Image (cartoon, rainbow, N blue to C red; front, top):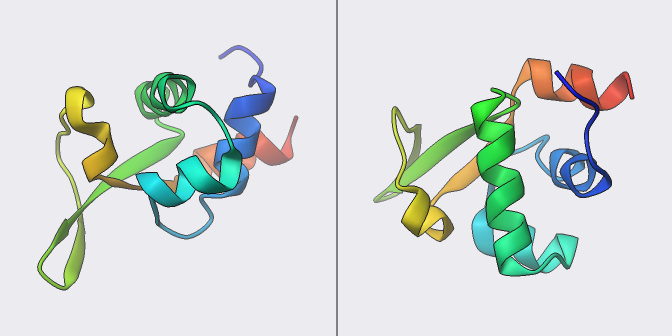
Length: 87
């Protein structure tokens, strides 16, 4: 895999614990389109996983709708945390 872009590192650093999209948008200060693109890239490289809130539970999603990525919660995978530390 290629090196992480600074915005991807910033996102990963916020995902030690599950965080919803709106919190990531606020904490990273990235434009919505850039955040969306980086999240999809990180998901495709299996560096973050997607979680879905259902009632009072948060469950790992088996799939996600990239057109409505703002509806999900994200968390770094072990591979994502390792990649972030090694760069």
